[in-house]
Length: 231
Image (cartoon, rainbow, N blue to C red; front, side, top):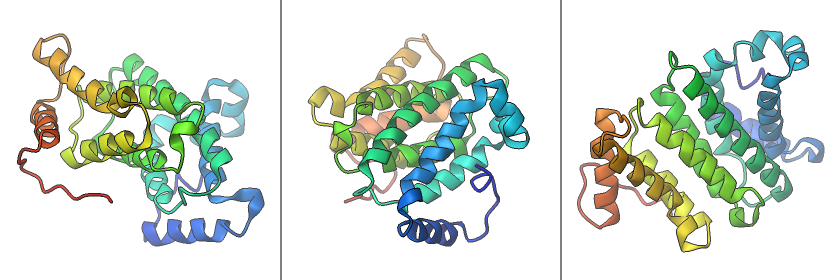
């Protein structure tokens, strides 16, 4: 937890080295690190955890941006083709994390997610969706659902980049098997736009055109941003 809460110079070099080094330790593989971080975040509700991790856990919301930045950087260097039992556990923990994060957003109206938190959460989610056989994990659909609820809520206040939406929607499409599951995130985002147009919810003004461009891109039309295929 403390490592992810650290301001690190040469962050890409640091986390790539950590991931590579952990491949030699079966007791603590690269995915286990993510698992332990998320397990600590689940302890926030317990008074004992607050006493054990007083310096970090009590200030978790204020430090979330840095932790998510480090996590999104680190997960890029973790193999999606190994440690499947640990990835399955991470999927379950991440589902709980996004649902708790959503609850905190809805309960604390004075603190909305900032753009870097949104970008980093999408980065983490894209990496998870690219894990081999993601669709076979017990909580795969639940995670996508939990993330979609968090994402659509964040779109109300926080600007999002078109490339980020395309990346996570494309990753979801490729990760899941059934057609209705493949389009889960895309449908949730478009549905939120429809609700905003009907004045049933708020949406950041910037995001109206972003979601419209997402729809145009899906239909094969030209959009303002250059789209790079992740294949």
